Length: 313
Image 1 (cartoon, rainbow, N blue to C red):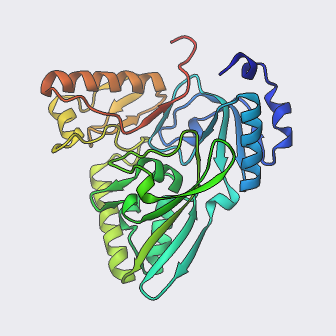
Image 2 (cartoon, rainbow, N blue to C red):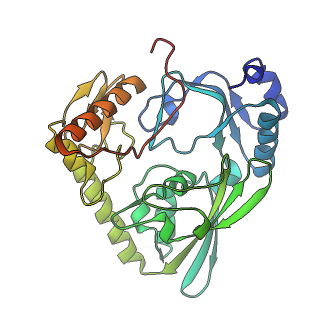
């Protein structure tokens, strides 16, 4: 943050922006790991007009904006996030279905929970999002990560993305321009994702729900869903599961502070109580070191790490 931004009186500055606001709020309650230091400012925006006004204020004063979706697949450092953390609410948590005989287009806000969308559309007999049932987080987060499972990924049904660009213009980009790959994307710098357009096809509700139930049962059997976690910590290297490498390196159950490599799934780090981001980062570093030493494979992070370390670190 620039010295100018550091001197800004955020409560006064944000008075002109519509929406609920809070200052110095710990972000642990907003992340699936239940870890995270405070947001300098936390603003919930209900519509595009409010978001545009917030963006204009931030741009004018050199303040960074960070959009927080469902808080999954994310590690917020113990020192928290400087500038403005944005929650997309209201109009960003709705969808519109435009159905034809055998296909449908879905316009869905970036703040809509992905798993809920999959369930609701599946109950209406629309197929294509079965893979998404049980994936935590929002549509926007799924667009950034090109979220998926062995059953499919978002890029297979995504038609276009609507964005608020850094200069305040709203733009729509086709899926071919989004650089989607395995848990990655390349959206324009500092763009804020507003909505997705998805294409689904007509299916049998019973068959769709059966696939989703089976996938969720598999998650329950293989993943530590009863403890706070952020999903898979590392991407799978070509031809091998990251979890198998971590397990083969003898790291299941390894613990630093309140963070532990899950005994059920080695590619999950769980918060067993009071974990700090520093604990998770130390465990990540240990895992990468041990797997590299044992197998010559450098594991690449799937989770995003954001924010500032605590002052004592």
